[in-house]
Image (cartoon, rainbow, N blue to C red; front, side):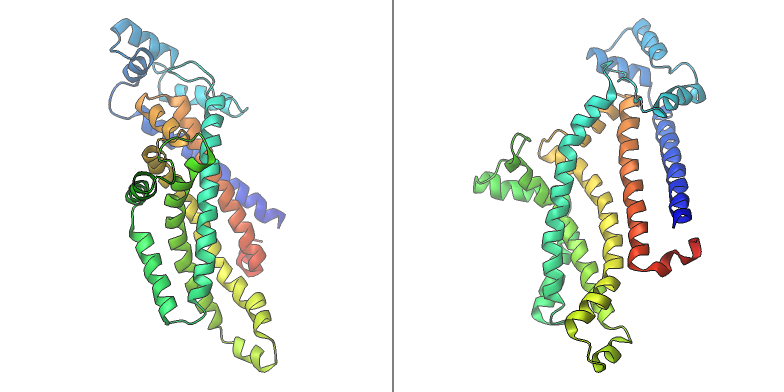
Length: 312
């Protein structure tokens, strides 16, 4: 098991290193002059040539790609995310503030997805092919097809404009989180419902289950000991992949609902070509993906130890 964890960690290091290098290269080679973009963001106006040259020198843009990347990555290895090229303030406190808005919203959306998907899938599989099953599949299919931005606008029109029950913009109170969480969570629930329903039905078709019933094993024990672990593997897979949906959807949803968070932090940093802030946001997102994938890999081996036999 230790060898498996070490291999997973080594893969994680490779992924994070590649992510840092790729992001820096994309920003470096993007069209336009990054020094001009930083100067305009810093002064809110077109800056003279001497100011642009000064910004280029301060940001290390005149040192070449390799030297600039090394100058950025070296402090990061000891936990220093550097200072913003635009404001001059430390990146880490601003990033933590943005994350403090984004993480609760992501967790609330994931909670909504689980609360809706698990009961809906269980109800659907009670009578496969029945009207409840067909209805659940139809609802899930529609939920997958609806874009997050469109669903968000519909919820704003219904609950904020027409009914006036919930606030539409901002993040001042917990009530401001309800509509964004529903927008993201319903999309997650649609995908999870479909995969959990399919997993349960497939698990119930395993060839050895009739033999267990003939031996007198009760239905509850079969469902708990054999059906649930078999159905959990694809469910866990999609649950991990839904994190990508949440992070992608958060960018759109935070803009629609005018919420401060990682999305606004990243969008403003990209517009200003603020290298330290963009890199910090991308790396934190990559770390989240890596950690979730590590946990999923370990959970796989807990649910089915045979999955990791070839890695031992």
